[in-house]
View 1 (spheres, helix red, strand yellow):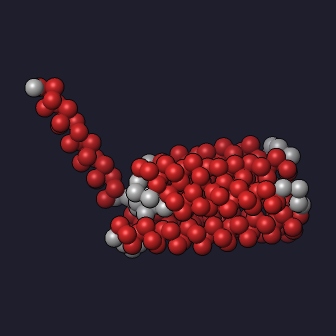
View 2: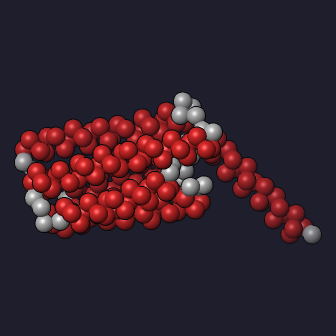
View 3: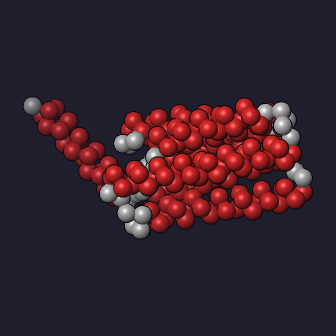
Length: 191
């Protein structure tokens, strides 16, 4: 009887802790949207492989635009379904933490483009994107900063490998990590 009571109390505390964590965090991260972004990024990686310079960059910029549309649409759908407001302090903190590294990455991309340093872009993108999720993940569900660290590890590796391999790492990150973490988020955090 005491064990059953202890187990019930522990379960109640877990429920309360999870509820409080969600109340102070932005939970409208779309798992299925991440999954879809991952599939399009895998395709972009295949199309970009073997291309160089501007042709390579155009493929990945098109993918970034497509991913932004998918991400925005699926965040809006999941947020609407859950009744989430995007004006809460947690949502604002999430988006500030996310957008600052993304803006920095865009500016670095422009500088690298002007210098003709295409080989540095995969590392810069993976590191910037990973940083966006590590910093914004402090205001979101627990798996988000873990995903960010995985992107950063791939970015660190991309800094030291030949360009064709760095493109594969882009596919592994923007493709594979989005698919894997998208499925985890969809399963554990309601789509």
